[in-house]
Amino acid sequence: MQFGVYSIGDVAPDPLTGRTPTEHERIKTMTTIAVRAEQAGLDVFATGEHHNPPHVPSSPPTLLAYVAARTERLLLSTATTLVTTNDPVRIAEEFALLQHLADGRVDLTLGRGNVPNVYPWFGQDLRQGVALARENYALLHRLWREEDIDWRGRSRARLDGFTSVPRPLDGVPPFVWHASVRSPEGAEQAASYGDGFFVDNLRAPVGHYARLVELYRARYAEHGHGAAEQAVVGLGGQVFVRARSQDAVREFRPYFDGSPARGARESLEECAARTPLAVGSPDEVIEKILTFREAYGDYQRQLFLVDHAGLPRETVLEQIDLLGERIVPVLRRELASVRPPTWLPGPRHPAVAGGAGTGTGTGTRAMAMAGPGAPPVGHGRPVAAGHRPH
Image 1: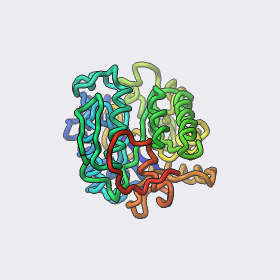
Image 2: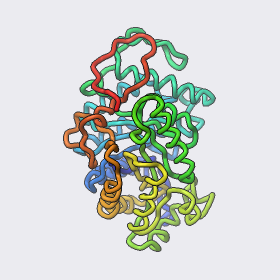
Image 3: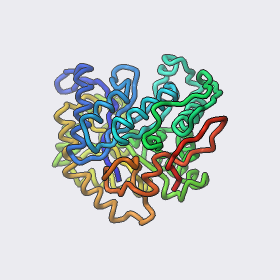
């Protein structure tokens, strides 16, 4: 199973000091977080994509390429890549190039985005979000698997005999997760292609996300990609850990209260009781995370948000160290002890020798990086794949 951290790259004042980091400082902190995650024994670092203040990660491939050069085994991902407002040709090119630079340590999470203004900024219509996600991914999926593509769509200019370059590393495209916060469309799209499904697991009750995962698993099996329990599920979440529970609550409270997405709506205690948020001692955090398996089934990836709402850089790095030293080793052991033999490890490109996490990295799951996919539409010459379904 793969464990890691992700960042949405918000630039926020520290409520205790009033100081707001510069954009330069925040960007550098994100890269430091990624390097520290590898040093702490974690498996994955993911960055969000945002084009509105107060966020800085407007170009995930650029940030991840820098991280790739500073790490050796860390899996690099996004949380998320906007499939609605990015040109699928550019996504295909940029992530294939990143895949080569990182020797296969790359996958990505696609989503529609939750900032309405982004659509007109990139010449798109929010009301067409679902249709854009469907059409753009259909093209992206083909671009990584075919050459000499002819394409006619509604969201971009036509393509005639187009081949995206560079080609995916060893003919195996980056693994794709489809993200969802509220709507079932992401679950359905992930299931139809046999891709992974990622839920942010942050602000809503666990039952809400569990229904989306259940839908995805059922449709994954119905589409013939494997048994429902073999579907590829990833979860987000947020933790704050200290040796004593009361210290964790006391220290985290001002950052929770200052968060525009959380503190104005409910108390820290109410949110922790209602949602997957875990704040407390290592044992308390472990206990809560282990309950996720009861709701979602056995899953492949667990990412944690650790740097939100102005938390100081050194505090964030301490949280990563605590994850690596006190939390993740126990989770690996406990989850492995109850995992059925049919479970498959988290996705990795076959070129990643040795790999990350506790999976073997060989066989069907490693080859699943390319995804079985839906039947191609239109014209195009397929290329070597090595991407058989489960």
